[in-house]
Image (cartoon, one colour):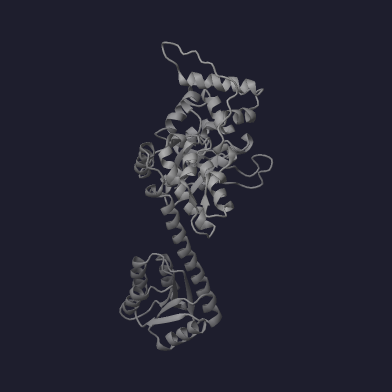
Amino acid sequence: MQSKKILIVEDDDSLRRVLEYNMAEEGHIVMSATNGKEGLKIFREEGPDLVITDLQMPGMGGIDFIREMRSLSPQAMVIVITAFGAVDTAVESMKLGAFEYITKPFNRAELKITVEKALEVGELFVENNYLREMVKEKYSFDNMIGTSPRVNEIFRLSSQVAKSDATVLILGESGTGKELLARGIHLNSPRKDRPFITINCGALPENLIESELFGHKKGSFTGAISDKQGKFEMADKGTLFLDEIGELKPHLQVNLLRVLQEGFLDKVGGNEPVKVDVRIIAATNRDLEKEVTRGGFREDLYYRLCVVPLKIPPLRERKDDIPLLVDHFLSHYSKKSNIEKIKIDKKAIKVLIDYHWPGNVRELENLLERMVVMNQTGIITTEDLPDRLTSRPQKIGKVLIDLPDDGLSMEDLEKQLIIKAFEKCEKNQSKTARYLGITRNTLLYRMDKFEIDRG
C-alpha cells in the first residue's frame, strides 16, 4: 500500500513510541500528539489519512476529540485504542463515526490488519467522493449542451423542478437525451446522495416486469427461489426513472397508480403492503394524451405522472446547437482516445447542420465517436462522412399535390405519406423507414402518433 499520513494521539509515552515505530516500519508518515487539543491542531494543518487515538487522556479526552475532528471532516478515518474495561466508551466512539476500536494489550499483527482495513476504506471514501463530484459536474444543468431558446427553457424548468419531489414526465423522440435529463434532475435534487434506479418498461417481458418493478416473495411463481427486491424498493429515498412508460400494460398501470397515490406497493405473492419513498421521473416517445383518448393509457395515471411535463425538442428543431454538440463530442472522444483534439472543417459542419438526424443527439454522438476513432489526419472533412449525410435523396417519380384554397394540414400530409410508403414497401417497417430516410423507432413513433395500423 502507498505511504499514508497517520496521526497518533496518545498520552502514554511508551505506547505512543511503539505505535510510531510500528507505523513507520510499514512505510507511513507518522505524526503524534499527547492530547486531543494538540491532535486537533495537527489534524487541521496536516489532514492525515488516518487517526489512531486513545480515549482516556488529560484535557480534551478521546470522545470530545473525535467529535471535534468529525465536525471538521465527517469522513475522517479513526481507530480507537481503549482499555479492556472501557469497551462501552469505545462503542460510544463508534457511534460518533470511529472506524474500529482495539483493546489494550494488542499485538502488532492486530494493529497492522486494522490499520490496513481503515486505510482501504478511507481510499474508497476519497474515490467515491471524487466520482460523485465528477458525475455531479457532468450532469450539472450549467454543463449541458445547448443555447437554443427551447433547450434553455428545458434547463431552466429542470433546475427549478429538481429542488422539489414533484413527479416529472419527460417527452421526446428516441435519442434526444431523456435519461440524461432525468439523471441531471436527480443529481441536482435533495435526493442526490440516494439511488437513481432505471427500468425500461418496454424492454422486459410482460411476465417479468411486475416482479422487476415491485419485487416478489419466495415461491410466488416458478423460479422464485428467494425473496427479491423490486426497483421501487431499490430506489427507496431516491429516484426511479421509468423509461418508455407508454409501453406499460394496463394492469401494471393500476399497481403503479397505487404506489404514486398511497406510497405502498404489493409484492408478487406478498400479503403485506410495503411502504416506499420514491421520486418518480417517467419518459416516453409516445403521445400519452392520444393514448389516453384511445384507451391505451389510464387517464388518472397520466395526470399523476404529468405533474411537470418537459418536452425535449428533436435535434432537427435545434440546429443552432449542432456546432456546440460537435465541439463537445470531438473534445470528449479525442481525450478518451488519448489523442490531440480532432478538428472538423466548415463544409463538414454545414453537412451536419443540414442533415435531418432521425436518431437525434445519440446518432450524432455515435457518428462523431466513430469519426474520432477512424480519423488519421487530425481533421474531419466531408469525405470522411457517411453517404447518408452527403448524398441527396433520389426523387422517385413526382409527388403531385392538389393545393386547396382553404389551406392544408401538414400532419394529414405526413400521415398520408407514411401510409403510401408503408403500402409501397409491402408493410415492412424497416424497409419503409429506409425508404423515408428515418429510423425504425421514429417511423413507429409517427405511426402511433397518427394511429396508423402497423399491419
